[in-house]
Amino acid sequence: SQPSLSPALLRISEYVLKDPAKVVNQTITEVADGSGSSEASVLRFCRDIKFSSFQRFKLALGIELSTH
Image (cartoon, rainbow, N blue to C red):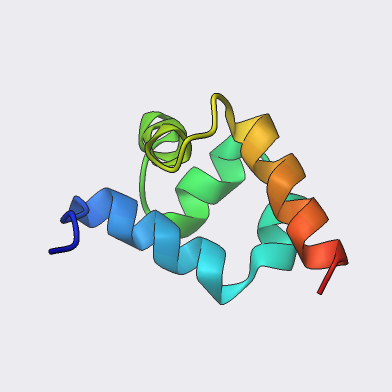
């Protein structure tokens, strides 16, 4: 069974998946505002998917986008 995401983490994941290229250029505050969540929730989302920081998440996302 899949682990259940909190409503905030679900909104963040949907926001990132909708336009990852936009997220790569946004600040943590912009992602929080855009997804209707908090900066703490964005950081929790990053940590839940095994990134130690928002910057590391964005770096990996950018690399992934550039290879596809």
